[in-house]
Length: 173
Image (cartoon, rainbow, N blue to C red; front, side, top):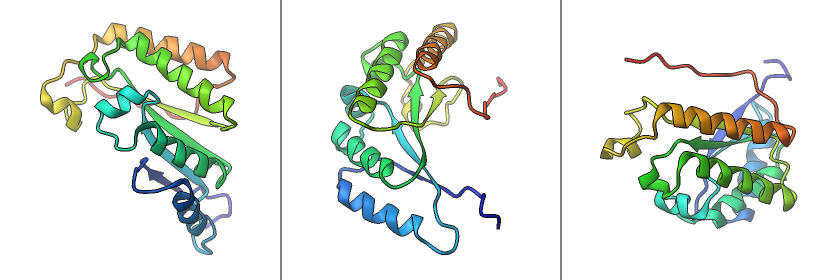
């Protein structure tokens, strides 16, 4: 395997692990002789305390900060996965407000010294397989979601982010 091969692991914030626990865990993974981890993907889903609570994320922002701080100190390459277009009934906020919350969260993390090198955006439309949506929650209108996504992308472009190499398109049933 080439030395340029990227090995990635995805982790979700957990109230059971402290920043120190995460650092020890990532240290073991990044120092392995065979297939050391070179990228970590953080399944944050949201950067708003209230949305994390409504999503059932135990530990909320405290748990999220623990893992982001640990990852930021453990690897050069990492991404933070965020969902846009959560049902208003989950977030209590419109799609546009959710995007504004996301930008505010990224700005706050960067102000605290986190590099936040890569943001992965996942929008929810036509994804009935997701557990959250099986409870008959109504997704935002597709046009409203697209408008909010473009707004978020524009605000991230203003902060120096650029499109990555992957876009996922899903065929309508």
